[in-house]
Length: 64
Image (cartoon, rainbow, N blue to C red; front, side, top):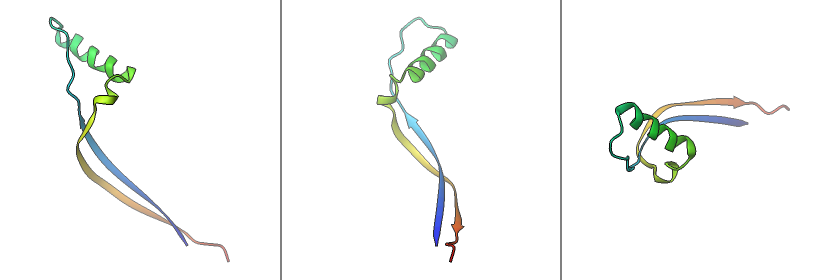
């Protein structure tokens, strides 16, 4: 018998980044989104918190 187990977790990551001075709030948001989408922020992300959301199992019966 085989069992497929699915675990869903919620990860909270934290990155410390430098933001150029003089940007408006919307420009800061766009700058952060651009860094994230370009992959530049990925290297700086550290897992800050991990929360267990759910776990499920599907049993697959072997055919005789």
